[in-house]
Length: 156
Length: 87
Image 1: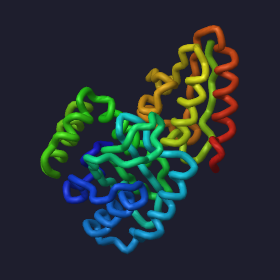
Image 2: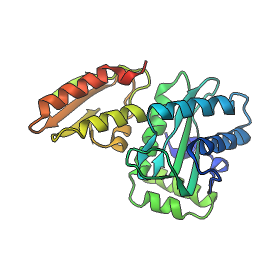
Image 3: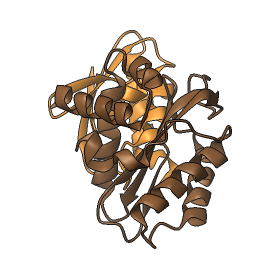
């Protein structure tokens, strides 16, 4: 699975307005809702699930990256989004660092495999040299999407 | 030293299980690898563990080398069999 298979340019948030974990997650889900306009994307319900699960264990995986993910009913394939915060958000990440890059994943409930494939691709791109630097410096959603496309090509 | 294990939680090794594996592995001095379909990754790195995309029923070889390898393998096997406190 490629990054650009599940992240559309229109769901990329170049600069998150939110400065805390819950509002950042809400802002990203609302953006997905506006783009996909699906009744299956119930914003409050999904935010509650994600926040609850963050309390069990943070999805801040280090390198200023967080990957909140949840499985929901009624979607056919993975829906992802990317949000960037230049100020940084406290995610209680494993390395204690603030999170600047959030990849959020909604996966079909009956396909645990698709969730893992999306996470695999994010982990693969996150390991690429200068990945964080390039993403932090990109000036708009088109540039960010361009970086995603390039990384997908490099990894294929 | 090696040990074969089978992933038994429904969601597989997603972020939280990967974090638990890496955290536990880091408590040991031994070098620890997770091997799936011939691909070896460092079990002390969440990012590397996620690249395995190991789902339910995936077969993993855990390889540990060092003076606490026996303890490391036992502890990791126990963690995986506990399903990471999930379904």
